[in-house]
Every structure is written in C-alpha cells, then in structure tokens.
Length: 238
Ligand code: ADP
Ligand code: MG
Image 1: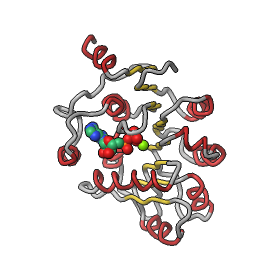
Image 2: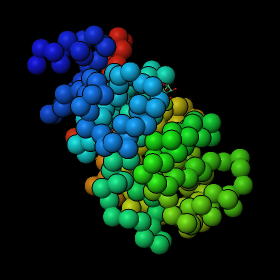
Image 3: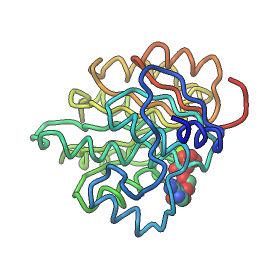
Image 4: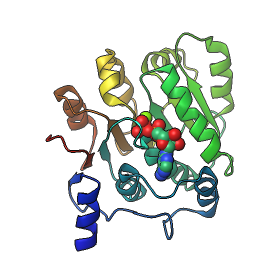
C-alpha cells in the first residue's frame, strides 16, 4: 500500500522476496504478548527500528530472512523477540534435549551482549540461555548446557568443540540465527559455520544478519536459506 511504501522509503528500506508482510511500524497494536510488551515498555523504546519493523513480521511467520543493516540499528531484538515467541510455542525441553534457538556470533564480547538481552527479554517467561565462547573454561559452559537451555549463544569454534565432545546436540534447533555473518566469515569461520549448519535439521527457520553484503555472505545465504526475504536498510546499492 501507499503508506507501507512511504514508510519503507522514509527509512531507506528495500525488500526482496515472495509475499513480504507489512512492517510493524509502531509498538501499539504490535503482535507481541504482554510479557514482551512490558519489557519493551520498560526499556523505554519509542518505536521499532527499521530493521525490527520489517524483520519481526517475517520472522513471526516462520520465514527465512537476510537482514542487512548497519551496527547499532537494533538487530539483536530483531531476531530475539520472535525467537522467544517461537520457544514459548514449542513443547518443553526434556532431559537430554539440546537448545531450540541457536545464535552464532563472531566474538565473545558480542555473544555476551546477546546473552544479556536474552536475560532481560526472556526472563519473564523463564527462558533459559547459555553462552559459550573460547578463551574461557569449558567446564562451567558444559554444566549449564547439561541442565538444558532453550537459547544457546555461541561462537563457532567453541560450539564445534563442545559438539564434538558430545556435551550438547543440535537436534532440537528449529530457529537458527547467524549474527554478524560478514564478521564471522572475515574471521575465517566459514568451514566451522558450514559444519554446524549441516548438523541442523533442514526444516529449521534461518535468520542471517550482516552489516555488509560481500560475495562470501551471499554464497552462504544461497546455500543455507530457503525462500528467504531480504531486507536492506541503507542507501548503498547492493
Ligand atoms: P546492532 O546489532 O544492529 O548493532 P543492537 O541490537 O546492539 O544493534 O542495538 C543497538 C542499541 O539500540 C542497543 O542499545 C539497544 O538496546 C537499542 N535498541 C534496540 N531496539 C531499539 C528501539 N526499538 N528503540 C530504541 N533503541 C533500541
Ligand atoms: Mg548486533
């Protein structure tokens, strides 16, 4: 419609793909449960950022997405809020189950930032999470995983390490996020990413976020996303 077009234009948004839903341009009337609206309100956010406005309805429909937007544009909550709703619609974790949501992140620092948002926005619905990264003792990460977590935030190298030790499994992962995909590839994680992705059920939902759109990221998207919608915020021609 005309108002959707003018919203997209005003935030420099371009979308590509089949059946793109309308953006959620304001929190009033947004399709979020009360426990999330409460957290959004207490965070003091006035309105969704552009990437959130378009990523949320796509993710809530179970579609794959590529979200291209600069640093600081609110990408974490773009994938995290729909992931919490996804988890709350799944059967409870059983003993021995691995995570339902897997978020791959390039660095420890970024992984911990994501985990902090998981604690804040997943706390009221008692969603459990765990963060695993290199350069820290494995024992504590492993004991958290063994208790069972719904969201696992991980750097690729440490996750491979933990999987090969048999300390968790990816059989229940139905919502996969590749955050900062360009940085993960820059850091040389392509082989690890492809190995992890090949262990996750093909009927999962996949969300990929990146600040830039180089050939290597395009090829990863081509190989691992299905019938995705691409959302780009910015002026640069892709
Ligand atoms: P990115 O991953 O795109 O670099 P982040 O998800 O880290 O961005 O978000 C950057 C900052 O914006 C964070 O401090 C976050 O709390 C804040 N933020 C997220 N969503 C909103 C919003 N809708 N309105 C205002 N600030 C927001
Ligand atoms: Mg980010």
